[in-house]
Structure formats: structure tokens, C-alpha cells
Amino acid sequence: MQQPFATLPAQPVAFARLPALSESRLARFSAILILYFLQGVPLALSLVALPGWLAEQGATPLQVGAFVGTAMLPWSTKLFNGMIMDRYAFKPMGRRRGWILLAQFLMVVMLVIMAILAPTANDIAMLAALCFILNLCVTFSDCAVDGMAVDIVPEGERTAVNSMMFASQALGVAVCSYLAGQLLQSGDVTVTALVLATMVAGASLFVSLFRERPGERLLPWTHGRASRECEERQQGAWGPILKGMFRSLLVPRTILFLLGTGCACAMLAFVDAVNPTLAVQQLGWTTERYASYNALINLVAAGFGLFVPVLLVRRFGLRWSMIGFFVAIAALAACAGTTVSTWQGDTAFMGLTAALYIMSIMLSILLIVWAMQI
Image (cartoon, rainbow, N blue to C red; front, top):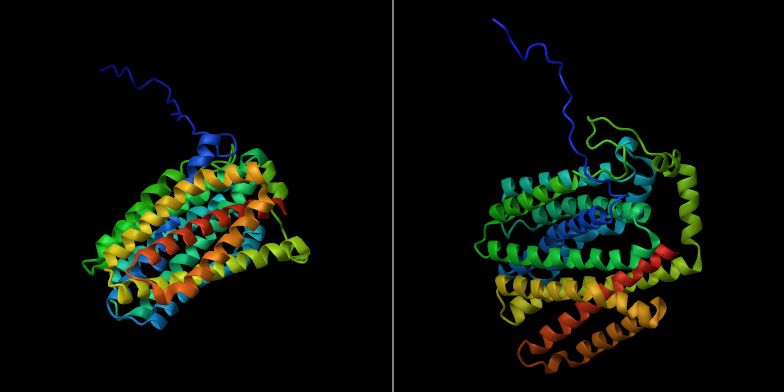
């Protein structure tokens, strides 16, 4: 019996490749913004949803502050994260992309572990440890995304992409704060963690479809090779990395940048530690209301961060825009400290919190733009 298909030669199946991030503006903007949006998951849990929930369950300001401080500690190690990435990389997948995918995978794993352990409000140490590891994962992702942006984003796009990055992060915090606040209102950490794990997994899967540069591997077991740019830029020894780091750190402009960033972060850290207990225990807010209000603030901050820094830099320049935000934030903080005893209701708290946070986000955007120019 004749078999008409048996003699046909096998033909390889060819799939159209998506453009690499380095060659497509739309692809790199999409990937970077999604990754910054996903940073909102650990930030929303560590700074908004869980602190508000703990305060509602009777945690003291000291306990909430200890939780926030422990959970956010990995963000102080980004210098060392960057050095590790400069030294080690799976070059066939690009300088940073392998680190990004690994960090995103570990974020999903940690959220699943949180769901399995299901800590209660009495397990503050366990919650702090889980959020510490979760933030450690996202700091590696953050460093990798920033490094990739420096490598593949043209100079003319950097102010715009930085505004969009922080706006996307603020939007991620807004969405995840609202979502986690609603889910935690029932006291169920398991459902909250699983929903967030699903969100991170789905978005990370989309990002994994894009190569960093043409010709590189999509996944470790697929075909591809390291790009010329990766081979040239990736360091092969610790000596040049350490030398370059100290040379950069000892420049007056870098020291000034670090002082400015430190002051801005110190103010935000104080607000993050005090606000949950102030709102929930002193003003009588619920976890749901506190999370929803923070979601609204982050949503507004995302809108402002998307356009205002770009317009201010074009109108006043980067230097004067940063100085203006520093002065305005200091004035608002002084106003809050001197008038807190006269507050009636929660109107002043809401207004000052919103103004301080929105301006801090825009200042952070400008500081990162400045850092790229140092």
C-alpha cells in the first residue's frame, strides 16, 4: 500500500522570532515597565498591606517598624548585587537577562512558600524573614533591569524611560496594595500570596519571550551565543570592578548624589514605619482603608511621575528641579512635625502623606536620571 507522506523529507519548523530588546523600542519599554510593575508586589506587601494588617491586629509601632526595617533591608545591598552581576553572567543569554529571569522565578517560589506557611499576625518574625527574602529577590531584578536599561536604552530615551519606570513601579504598588489589602481583610495570607504569585509568574513569562540582543539564547537550553557587546562589557575579574567602584564612589558628585538619595530614603523610611500605626491605631482606619488610600496615592504618583519630571527637566533643568523637590519636601516635613498636635480628623494626614509621597517619587526619578549621567 502506497504511503504518500512517507517519502517527503522532514522540514524544520521555523517560528518567527520576536524582536530583541536592544532593537525594538516597544519591546524594551514593555519589558522594563512590566518588570518595574512587578516590583510593586514585595513593596506593597512590605510597606502597605502587611504593616497595616499588623497594626490592625494590635502590633506596636516598634514591631511594625522592625518588620518594615527588616523586610526592606535588602535594598541597602544593591551596590554588592551590581558588583556580583558585573562579575558573573550567563553570557549566552545576555549580561542581565539571566539574572532577571532567575530573580523573577525565585519571587514566585517565595510567594508560594509564604502561602504554604500561612503565617499569622503573631508570626511577625516569620513574615519579616519571608519579606526579606522576597525583597532580596526583587533587588537583584531591580539591579539587573537598571543595568540592562543602561546597556540598551539610547541616551535620548533615558529621561522618558526613567519616568515610566518609576510610574510603573508606583502603579504596581497601587494595584498590589489595593489587592492585598482586600484579600488580607479576611485574614488569609495564603490566598493573598497565591494571587500575587500568579500575577508575577504570568507577567514574567511574557518578559521571558524577548532576548536581550539578537542571536542570544532565549532560555539556557536553547540555541544561541553571546553577543559581541556582552563579551566586551562583561568583566572577567574582581580587580577592575573594585577599582572602578572606588574610583566612582570617591568623586564629589557621587558623594553628593548618595547623600541626597540617603536623605530622601530616610524620610520615606520614617513615613513607612510610622504611617500604618498612626492611621490604623490613632485615626481608626481599617487595613482595607489604609491599603486603598495608599493604592490611590501610588496611582496618582504614577500619573505625576510619568509626565512631570520630564516637563520640569525641560523647563528648569535637572539640577534646579532636584533642588526644588528637596526644599519642598523639607518644608512639608517641618510643617507636619510642628502642626501634628493641632490636627482635627484625618484630612491633614491624608494631604501631607500624599504630597510627601508624590514628591518623593518624582525626586527619586530625577536622582536616577542624574545617576546615569555621573
